[in-house]
Length: 306
Image 1 (cartoon, rainbow, N blue to C red):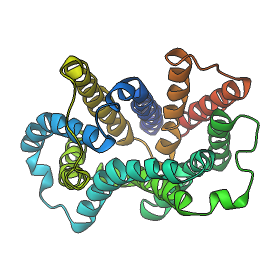
Image 2: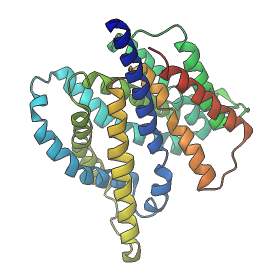
Image 3: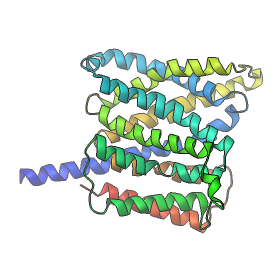
Image 4: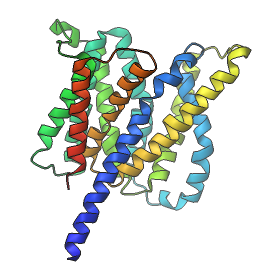
């Protein structure tokens, strides 16, 4: 009887974890609402730096309260934290942006959809996660759904050379870093509380962001008439898209396999599609609705797995 109760509790925890990861990732899809205006006056690096300085107000006291968790951290843990902070938060975003600047956007989007594949492979190697029999089918179902969201029924690439080049390597690198960050985050959650991992992600990114911003030497001139609006948007990005989303994400990841979580993260393009429809008045097509359904079916079935 106790075993049955334990299994039911574990299943309930897994379902809740998948849903929390999906909710945290879904908040990232709200990004365009806040970024459109701000990008008229600041670069992406400047925006991310300011957001992390705001989030330092959260990170500093949390790390002081949870400082005992830092004892006994090995080089493996430090590498995982730097991978999450420098790789997933900073470098992946830069690489993805540069890929768009240098190559075919469709090819870049297609290659980025390989992120769950990288996460599943790394989770199997590093975390020794076992996968249920139906998981490959669910993975293919979710990837097919994101494909339809992005490209519809058409083939995105007309020539092979469009997927071979610098932009493709950058897109693959971003997909690898984002997929790897999911796995490294799961690794760290066996050592620390999710609040501590979130705080360290913000804090450790600051030195790299300072260096990148210094190297860019951008202008900091914002018209006085727009200063209040820009400040409000950046604060909302930092608190909602940064702090709240990552707390939900890591809370869910703490009770979820990394291979399951990477599918739950596909709620991000779903919300992005909805924002394009609601805010930017882009028409939602039948292929996109089909992709929407496929992803949510995959997420539901994943949340039901033991």
